[in-house]
Length: 108
Image (cartoon, rainbow, N blue to C red; front, side, top):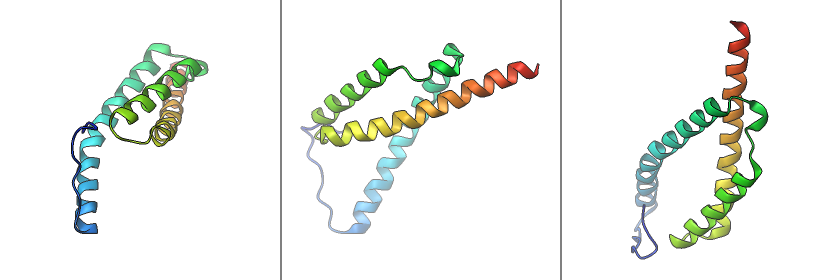
């Protein structure tokens, strides 16, 4: 991704802005899929829906998001809010994966 020292373009039209957003989304999605894989691995290793939420780790990731946001020219408050929303969804997904594994194990 771009760093704060990288000049960002100025767009002449909304079509250009939308095309840039679409291109960024195409770059972000493989990273989100890789993050989802890590979450699936965490679910497999933890193997207990009750430990999906680890508060100290959530706070650590939120602090990292703020620092990374600031380093890359993104408002740290916005970075933290985005990451907290993303983490909440991934935690819910992790819990679902663990519950499915427990239910699957009980059926065998």
